[in-house]
Each structure stands twice: as C-alpha cells, then as structure tokens.
Image (cartoon, rainbow, N blue to C red; front, side, top):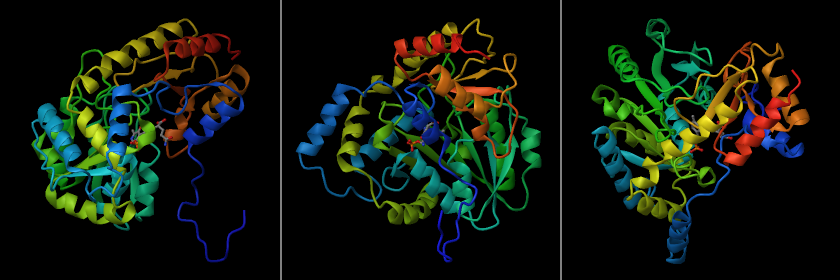
Length: 386
Ligand code: PMP
Ligand code: GLN
C-alpha cells in the first residue's frame, strides 16, 4: 500500500474488524452466518409504518443536536421506570449514531494523552482504538471467556495515579455474562474511592435470561453521578442498521460530551428518532425480548449437544460461546475460517476480543437467527471433522 510521506497511521496495528472479515468470508463461501451480531429477522411492521409516517409528514431535516425531544423524553421515562434515576431530557440525554458513537464520544470526552482506562477483556472491538486515538492507554483486566466472577482485588491493583475511567459492559459481548448487584456496588466503591469516571455499555440491557435482571449503572446513585451510560436501539428493536443510540450522563458530563458530538455528527437521523420515540411508549415492545431470545439460546444449545463442546449458557446478549478445547488444538482464527470455508458455518474466534494472542479454544455464535437457521447451523457443526 502506498502512503505519502505525510501520512502517519494513527492506528498502525489495526486492520478491518473481525465482524466485517467473517461476514465477508461467509458471503464468499455461502456459509450460514452466525458470526457478526445482527438479527436475521426484520423489525416490527408497526415500527416500519411509524418511520414511513414521519418521513411522509416532513420530519426530514436536521434534528436538534441533542436529539428530538419526544425521544429524549421517552428514554427518560423508560430509564426512570427501570432504574429510579431521572435523567433530564434537556441536559442529560443525547441521541447518538448508535452506541458506537456514544462510546467514542464518551471516551474522547474524558481521555487525554497519557491517561489510563481500565478495560475488561475480552472486550468489544471499538473500545481500545477509541482510547488510543485520544492518546490514552488501555489497562487490561483479562478474563477467561467462560469466567464465573470478577476478581475485584485484581481490578483495584490495576488502578494508578493515571487512571481516569473504567469501561464496563453488561450484559457482556462476547461472553454473555451478566454482572450482579454486588459487582456494580463494588465498582461504585472503587470509582468513588479513586474518583474515576465509568463508561457503561448497556446495549444488551433487554436481552437477559433465566429470570435474572439487568443491573444498570443508572440504578446506583454513586455510579450514576460519574457514568456515561451508552445504549442502542439496534439490539432492542432488530434495527442494527439504523445506528440509533444514546448517552445518558449527568448535566456537567453531558455538556462536555455534546461539545464533541456536535462536531462529529451534529445530529442523527430525524424520522427514525420520532418513530422510535412513539414505539417506546409501549413497554411490551422491549420487555418481551428476553423470552424471545432465551428460546433461541436453548434451541441452539440443545441442538449442539453431544458434539463435544463445553458451553456456559449465555446469561444475556444474543451470543453463545462454545469451547472446543476437548475436540481440537487448532487455533480459533484458523478454525473459524476453516468451518466457514469447508463446513459452511461462520462464527467469531473469541481471541479477536483480546489485546494479546490467547490460547482459549472458543468460538462465538450469534443466535439472533431464525430457528431453522440455528438448527441447520447445529447440523453443520455435527458434520465437522476435527
Ligand atoms: N457495544 C457492544 C457490546 C456491541 O455488541 C455493539 C454492537 N453490536 C455496540 C456496542 C455498538 O452498537 P451500535 O450498533 O448501536 O453502534
Ligand atoms: N456488535 C456486533 C458483534 O459483536 C458487530 C457490530 C459490527 O460489526 N461493528 O458482532
């Protein structure tokens, strides 16, 4: 590749994301795509009609920089009902271009060159590049893909004079783990003790299984006062392509957040904001999602039984990890590629979520797919020659 002498890469070690690569490989080999996380099914026709309604009624010009008021009000009400924390629509809620933008802007708002940010890995792929683009240094707390609990002493030992924030994600992509009330309380104590900000990625808040509940950073006052809570409608309404998300943060943090948001995108797609605002008025539209996905998780787990994988059932998200430790020594990237090419089933190698090479023998499968696809995927996995 030719670079002019003036171009110095800001991300010299970063290539194209694993999600893009595996989806492309799946397409090339006409494999079932259980790799990149997106639903195979469409969003509700009612929601589509609402978008149509707002496009036809002329809601087609710039939205206010912070988002249209009915959507900010609907998010405020919904968050208050689930967490007891009231975010003021005028000063504490910003609508963003997906959670990706919310995370990027939150990180940019608080990270200066030389600052350290605690990141739990496996980590979603956008966190670390955003920290590094700000000149920040990610400090990793490394967890097994099948981890049971967080060692908070180990977390505390990573905090230094330079630490400015801790970045968390619950329910967690890719492990499917869900943090407990105790975890969030401990995080609050640490954040208070060391005066840290928290960036809380809660995009899977409505996909949680076996009767457990999502503990939001917003529900703990000591955390809410220092947290940028990043959310998304992509997972909740089967609309990952709309890239509609939000950031909730106390007014002083939101003021700084918006200074960056306004020059990154200014505002986001107007008619879709109005449509989601109206759709959110009916809580049934998001409260049924957990049951819907739990049935899919169970179907997939049952269908792959007997192959020899070890699996800790996902507690949330639409991802199920399968460990092939007892089946093969093959490295996970090579296996994921081989399964796509030869056995027509695409997954994500979990090592892609780590900063250093790791030897975990784990693949991540997205079960946001039609039942027939999941059953067919399991059938293909049954045929694999290890
Ligand atoms: N965080 C996590 C953990 C995710 O899995 C994703 C996307 N799948 C995002 C953030 C980004 O969300 P969005 O598509 O709304 O930008
Ligand atoms: N969040 C999705 C996943 O984990 C992918 C989003 C993307 O491709 N950037 O698969």
